[in-house]
Length: 168
Image (cartoon, rainbow, N blue to C red; front, top):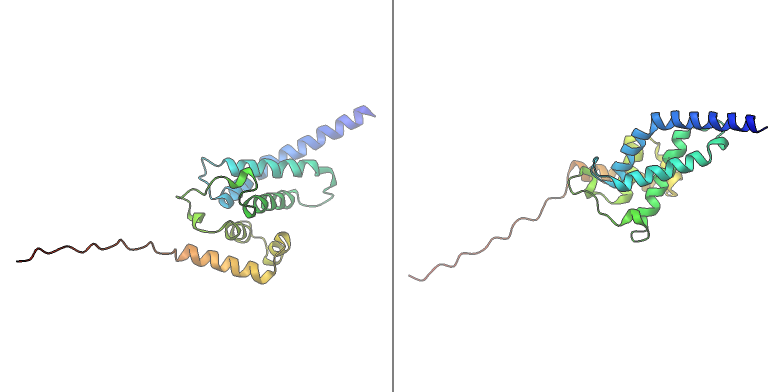
């Protein structure tokens, strides 16, 4: 009995290692986009990925034909949503986006929806169901995020100082 359990555990570990080898890079990139951190300095994204992979591993035997990538992406998105939407509630919300990131000008919710919809290719309805939002709201937030990226807000013009002219 113990030999059988040991074989199952070893098989499970090999399957999960193969999954991580194939999916971790893409999931880390998605997390880095969500957090708007620099790719070489992304501790929040790495924590999100670690938690998502830990949850995926914990339910590995119960997936029963489900795509483990979808499950890991769901954990990643929900982990980001919970940390970002509760701005001061957890360790993931204590740092600000990298100002050099193209996505830094978006709200966390806009970044999340944009990454799910455009980078991950998740359908609008699935994104709405995952986040508990109406489909129309997801559509509006995605459109707003795209518009902000395509036409970023202009910076304020510098103040013009009036020169004093000496009386002649």
